[in-house]
Length: 445
Ligand code: FUL
Image: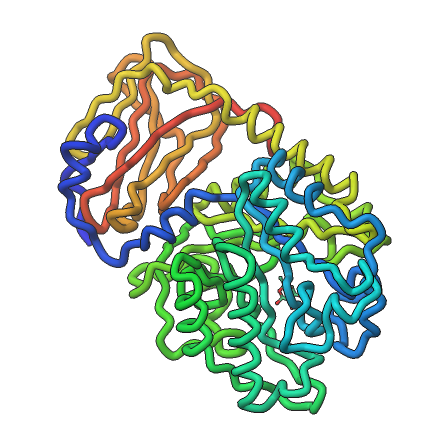
């Protein structure tokens, strides 16, 4: 680590400076870069639990309990799109083992239910709806299976691979595969020893563009909590040697901030439910988070360089409830209003040895700064300071921060300032800022 020697403002200088910069440390793959750009997408927990009021089904439920009365994936995808979410990750199979598609490798599926006379296929309906709306789709396939008779034996690893193959070859490309860390007992009372190396090789053989989520990646990591909050200092780097998924994962605070010198690029994904539970429960309508609360979580996840995976569980009709969709649309409106008017848009940018100065013709009013680092060359910036002046003689401190990564949003009391200086005070290598914008955000915390 050394103090910076040069500051490159890429909006102006990307073509002749940043392109020639060598990368520093681990860098994201092109799929991971595309994943970072998604920023916000939805999670949907749906299955027998939706109808039995459980969070963890036992696997012995009658498949007939799964019977949505007005199932409409176009409604899900339409709401996701309207909320500005870039995709939907669906629980194709949760811990109860129930498959939302008619799997050949299970007898506990939509085919065994009376829903659509056993002819339904949620994955097919959702993949068509997402395609129609121009959003992407991801799948959660729980390794833990409380129904499958082979669970707890080496044979189950084959079953799991076949199950993935069926999904990954049958419904078009997915952007993300989600591996839950939970590993409990199956119907024979035994726990499974998962062959994650084979799982990973098989998944990537069928869909090489996938990013795979788990506690320790390989591509995207859990943030150590289910509150949707990432640490203010967030390295997209993680050491995974000696750690496992589930029990044996790195400590939660490590997952929440990454490793400063981590060997692998593994981005942070903050998962949280819009309601109390992951599955829909009729008694939890009053727990739906408001648009303002969701915006606060956005600032603490996307605004700290990670992605926000927001769970919005369909109800027993097979629809997103109106209270949830109203909150989602309010959240979208708050984001749109917050980031509508970049007050630095027509600023003059000056580069000095170790800082960027933004010079405006007239003082502008702002309380929020959005910074982006050029992460394709590695995550470098350790600390920065923001100060402001109206005469170019005295700069008063406004705020300071640590990591930037894909995006960093910092808030501070309202400023009326003509000259703004951003000083990188510590960086692992030449800092590469890709974008700087400022806003006056009225209606957030
Ligand atoms: C956890 C699971 O056990 C929950 O049921 C839920 O799916 C959540 C997203 O991950 O590990």
